[in-house]
Image (cartoon, rainbow, N blue to C red; front, side):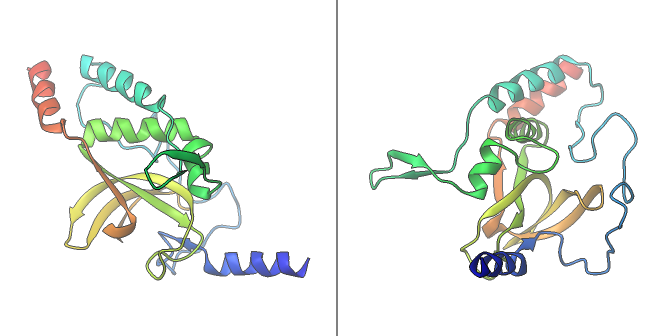
Length: 200
Protein backbone atom coordinates (compact mmCIF):
# COMPACT_ATOMS: atom_id res chain seq x y z
CA UNK A 1 0.00 0.00 0.00
CA UNK A 2 2.86 2.36 0.81
CA UNK A 3 4.23 1.78 -2.70
CA UNK A 4 0.92 2.85 -4.26
CA UNK A 5 0.86 6.12 -2.30
CA UNK A 6 4.51 6.73 -3.16
CA UNK A 7 3.81 6.32 -6.89
CA UNK A 8 0.72 8.56 -6.65
CA UNK A 9 2.69 11.27 -4.81
CA UNK A 10 5.47 11.04 -7.41
CA UNK A 11 2.98 11.32 -10.29
CA UNK A 12 1.29 14.38 -8.77
CA UNK A 13 4.58 16.11 -8.03
CA UNK A 14 5.86 15.62 -11.59
CA UNK A 15 2.59 16.37 -13.44
CA UNK A 16 2.76 19.26 -15.92
CA UNK A 17 0.16 21.59 -17.43
CA UNK A 18 0.70 23.89 -20.42
CA UNK A 19 -0.89 26.83 -18.54
CA UNK A 20 0.98 26.28 -15.26
CA UNK A 21 3.31 29.29 -15.59
CA UNK A 22 0.49 31.66 -14.69
CA UNK A 23 1.08 31.49 -10.94
CA UNK A 24 -1.09 34.52 -10.11
CA UNK A 25 -4.35 32.86 -11.11
CA UNK A 26 -6.37 31.62 -8.15
CA UNK A 27 -8.69 28.72 -8.92
CA UNK A 28 -12.21 29.31 -7.59
CA UNK A 29 -13.44 27.07 -4.78
CA UNK A 30 -16.93 27.03 -6.35
CA UNK A 31 -16.84 24.65 -9.36
CA UNK A 32 -19.57 26.72 -11.07
CA UNK A 33 -17.73 30.04 -10.79
CA UNK A 34 -14.95 31.36 -12.99
CA UNK A 35 -14.91 32.19 -16.69
CA UNK A 36 -17.87 31.34 -18.82
CA UNK A 37 -19.35 31.90 -22.24
CA UNK A 38 -22.86 32.82 -23.34
CA UNK A 39 -23.96 32.20 -26.90
CA UNK A 40 -24.12 29.58 -29.62
CA UNK A 41 -20.40 28.88 -29.98
CA UNK A 42 -18.50 26.76 -27.50
CA UNK A 43 -15.46 28.70 -26.26
CA UNK A 44 -13.15 25.69 -26.74
CA UNK A 45 -13.83 25.60 -30.50
CA UNK A 46 -12.36 27.85 -33.17
CA UNK A 47 -14.91 30.05 -34.93
CA UNK A 48 -15.36 29.66 -38.68
CA UNK A 49 -13.50 32.15 -40.87
CA UNK A 50 -16.24 32.44 -43.51
CA UNK A 51 -18.89 35.07 -42.91
CA UNK A 52 -22.11 33.15 -43.50
CA UNK A 53 -22.49 29.87 -41.65
CA UNK A 54 -25.23 28.47 -43.87
CA UNK A 55 -23.21 28.26 -47.05
CA UNK A 56 -22.26 25.40 -49.33
CA UNK A 57 -18.69 25.63 -47.98
CA UNK A 58 -19.95 25.12 -44.43
CA UNK A 59 -21.83 21.98 -45.52
CA UNK A 60 -18.77 20.59 -47.33
CA UNK A 61 -16.44 21.27 -44.41
CA UNK A 62 -18.85 19.64 -41.95
CA UNK A 63 -19.26 16.53 -44.12
CA UNK A 64 -15.49 16.19 -44.57
CA UNK A 65 -14.77 16.62 -40.85
CA UNK A 66 -17.39 13.98 -39.96
CA UNK A 67 -15.76 11.55 -42.42
CA UNK A 68 -12.30 12.21 -40.95
CA UNK A 69 -13.64 11.73 -37.41
CA UNK A 70 -14.78 8.24 -38.43
CA UNK A 71 -11.16 7.14 -38.99
CA UNK A 72 -9.69 5.53 -35.88
CA UNK A 73 -6.33 6.83 -34.66
CA UNK A 74 -4.43 4.78 -32.06
CA UNK A 75 -1.10 4.76 -30.24
CA UNK A 76 0.41 1.44 -31.31
CA UNK A 77 3.55 -0.67 -31.08
CA UNK A 78 5.13 -1.94 -34.32
CA UNK A 79 7.84 -4.45 -35.13
CA UNK A 80 11.18 -3.62 -36.76
CA UNK A 81 9.51 -3.65 -40.19
CA UNK A 82 6.84 -1.17 -39.14
CA UNK A 83 4.03 -3.73 -38.93
CA UNK A 84 1.34 -3.47 -36.27
CA UNK A 85 1.91 -5.52 -33.11
CA UNK A 86 -0.52 -4.15 -30.51
CA UNK A 87 -2.22 -1.09 -29.08
CA UNK A 88 -0.24 0.61 -26.31
CA UNK A 89 -2.05 1.09 -22.99
CA UNK A 90 -1.18 4.76 -22.50
CA UNK A 91 -2.70 8.13 -21.72
CA UNK A 92 -2.13 9.15 -25.33
CA UNK A 93 -4.07 6.13 -26.60
CA UNK A 94 -6.87 6.97 -24.17
CA UNK A 95 -6.98 10.51 -25.61
CA UNK A 96 -7.14 9.15 -29.17
CA UNK A 97 -9.71 6.41 -28.54
CA UNK A 98 -11.81 7.39 -25.51
CA UNK A 99 -11.61 10.99 -24.24
CA UNK A 100 -9.22 13.72 -25.37
CA UNK A 101 -10.18 16.22 -22.68
CA UNK A 102 -13.02 17.10 -20.30
CA UNK A 103 -15.09 18.58 -23.16
CA UNK A 104 -14.42 16.18 -26.02
CA UNK A 105 -14.58 12.46 -26.63
CA UNK A 106 -12.05 11.01 -29.08
CA UNK A 107 -14.40 11.27 -32.09
CA UNK A 108 -15.32 14.91 -31.33
CA UNK A 109 -11.62 15.70 -30.94
CA UNK A 110 -10.84 14.22 -34.37
CA UNK A 111 -13.70 16.20 -35.90
CA UNK A 112 -12.41 19.37 -34.23
CA UNK A 113 -8.95 18.72 -35.70
CA UNK A 114 -10.36 18.20 -39.20
CA UNK A 115 -12.72 21.21 -39.11
CA UNK A 116 -9.99 23.49 -37.73
CA UNK A 117 -7.56 22.31 -40.43
CA UNK A 118 -10.12 23.04 -43.14
CA UNK A 119 -10.85 26.50 -41.75
CA UNK A 120 -7.39 27.64 -40.64
CA UNK A 121 -4.94 25.64 -42.79
CA UNK A 122 -2.60 24.94 -39.85
CA UNK A 123 -3.31 23.73 -36.33
CA UNK A 124 -1.32 22.78 -33.26
CA UNK A 125 -2.31 19.64 -31.35
CA UNK A 126 -1.17 20.45 -27.82
CA UNK A 127 -0.61 17.99 -24.95
CA UNK A 128 -2.08 20.22 -22.23
CA UNK A 129 -1.62 17.81 -19.32
CA UNK A 130 1.29 15.38 -19.14
CA UNK A 131 2.73 13.10 -16.47
CA UNK A 132 6.02 15.06 -16.32
CA UNK A 133 7.49 18.29 -17.64
CA UNK A 134 8.26 17.80 -21.37
CA UNK A 135 10.73 20.70 -21.30
CA UNK A 136 12.94 18.67 -18.93
CA UNK A 137 12.43 15.08 -20.04
CA UNK A 138 11.20 13.35 -23.19
CA UNK A 139 9.84 10.51 -21.06
CA UNK A 140 6.26 11.65 -20.44
CA UNK A 141 2.75 10.40 -21.15
CA UNK A 142 -0.04 12.60 -22.47
CA UNK A 143 -3.13 12.97 -20.28
CA UNK A 144 -5.20 15.52 -22.26
CA UNK A 145 -5.06 16.97 -25.78
CA UNK A 146 -6.52 20.15 -27.30
CA UNK A 147 -6.59 21.70 -30.76
CA UNK A 148 -4.98 25.14 -30.87
CA UNK A 149 -4.65 27.86 -33.51
CA UNK A 150 -1.10 28.96 -34.39
CA UNK A 151 -1.03 32.77 -34.16
CA UNK A 152 2.75 33.40 -34.36
CA UNK A 153 5.86 31.52 -35.46
CA UNK A 154 9.33 31.62 -33.87
CA UNK A 155 12.49 29.61 -34.68
CA UNK A 156 11.99 27.04 -31.91
CA UNK A 157 8.53 27.95 -30.61
CA UNK A 158 4.96 28.72 -31.68
CA UNK A 159 2.41 31.06 -30.14
CA UNK A 160 -0.87 29.17 -29.83
CA UNK A 161 -4.42 30.28 -29.06
CA UNK A 162 -5.65 27.49 -26.81
CA UNK A 163 -8.72 26.88 -24.65
CA UNK A 164 -7.94 26.91 -20.92
CA UNK A 165 -10.53 24.65 -19.28
CA UNK A 166 -9.62 25.94 -15.79
CA UNK A 167 -10.63 29.51 -16.70
CA UNK A 168 -13.25 28.84 -19.37
CA UNK A 169 -11.81 30.86 -22.25
CA UNK A 170 -9.04 30.83 -24.87
CA UNK A 171 -5.56 32.13 -24.08
CA UNK A 172 -2.37 32.61 -26.08
CA UNK A 173 0.64 30.67 -24.82
CA UNK A 174 4.10 30.07 -26.30
CA UNK A 175 5.19 26.44 -26.56
CA UNK A 176 8.27 24.64 -27.91
CA UNK A 177 7.74 23.07 -31.33
CA UNK A 178 9.38 19.84 -30.18
CA UNK A 179 6.35 18.73 -28.14
CA UNK A 180 3.54 20.38 -30.12
CA UNK A 181 2.20 18.51 -33.17
CA UNK A 182 1.91 21.08 -35.96
CA UNK A 183 -0.45 19.81 -38.68
CA UNK A 184 -0.91 21.50 -42.06
CA UNK A 185 -3.63 21.20 -44.69
CA UNK A 186 -1.74 20.88 -48.03
CA UNK A 187 -4.86 21.87 -49.99
CA UNK A 188 -5.62 25.01 -47.96
CA UNK A 189 -4.62 27.52 -50.67
CA UNK A 190 -6.72 25.69 -53.27
CA UNK A 191 -9.68 25.52 -50.88
CA UNK A 192 -9.35 29.25 -50.17
CA UNK A 193 -9.67 29.97 -53.89
CA UNK A 194 -12.81 27.83 -54.02
CA UNK A 195 -14.23 29.62 -50.98
CA UNK A 196 -13.74 33.00 -52.67
CA UNK A 197 -15.34 31.61 -55.84
CA UNK A 198 -18.47 30.49 -53.96
CA UNK A 199 -18.65 33.82 -52.12
CA UNK A 200 -18.39 35.70 -55.41
